[in-house]
Image 1 (tube, rainbow, N blue to C red):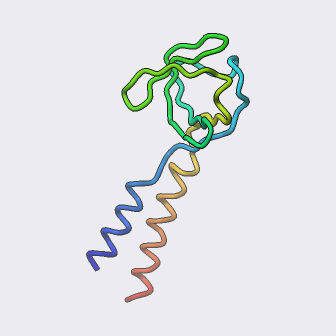
Image 2: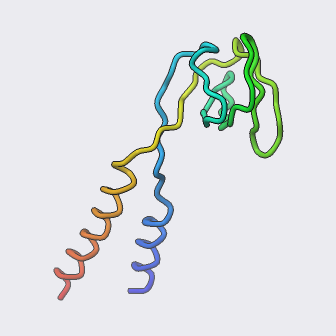
Length: 105
């Protein structure tokens, strides 16, 4: 019983409130201070933009500052707050736990 409770609490606590939406790869789409997921070749990075120019981005990734040329980025996803993941997922998990306990007794 404890193992099931721990499993459900880990699932509940490890859920994400954010999702990513794909955007175009041009310098006008990037906003300073926002978080993006970028793909360079087969490498994926989550970055926070510190400064931008027409051809490069100065970003913070893993507590280090990097300079990315915009043309080397193959795909860009912008982080977006997800109300569905924030509210509905925990409510559905809790309600399913309650239903499972009601069915066992």
